[in-house]
Each structure stands twice: as structure tokens, then as C-alpha cells.
Length: 119
Image 1: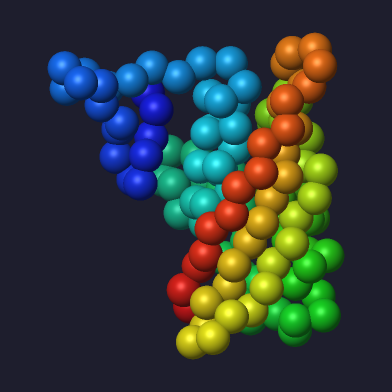
Image 2 (image 1 turned 90 degrees about the horizontal axis):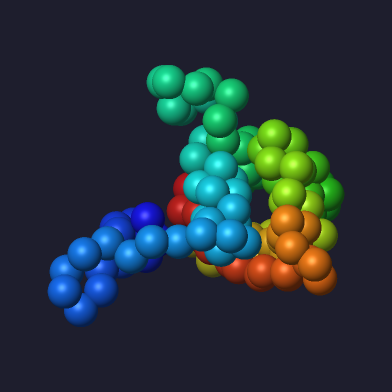
């Protein structure tokens, strides 16, 4: 099902919309990146360590964001992390921008998304 702002996106008749292909793979990747690693009881390996970057020196955040994203998506062979960046904003907000490539089709599809964590 297609997620939108933390809920299922519904069509005009009120039914959840289906998602497939590259968009589905990218949505799964986004979930893995946003869930803190170890917080999902049924699979403690699911998730990323991105939530820990707020405690790191700003010089390290950029490199570690890419490393942590690749680590979180290692079990998704059709997804490649092309780039990752992060920026410390005001009031303890850390923003991320990721470029992901879905290689399950030819030519591969490139997706870019961003989100922010509050610490």
C-alpha cells in the first residue's frame, strides 16, 4: 500500500492505493532509513543508525550518513544509495537528502527524497 504522511493514501472511493515496482522498493527503503535500528521488535536488524548522527561532530555526519544508509539497505539488492547528505539546522533539527537508484528496471530509476529528524 502507498504511504503518505504516515498513513495509507486512499483513492476517491476511500480504498488504499497499491504501489509496485521501483516506487514500492523506494518506499521500503525509506521505511528502513527512518526506523531506528533495533527498535522493531520482530526484526531488530531492520532500520538504520541515522538517528545517532545528531550526537556526531558535523564533520563526520556527511560521511556517516552515506555509510549508515548503505548499511540499512544492504539486504535490498535492487536499491543503491547514490548519495547521502545531512545538515544540522536550527533547534537541533538534522535534515537528510538521499539519492537512491532502483536497478530492478532498465534503465535504472533515480529517486531523491529528504526528511528531517528532531533531536
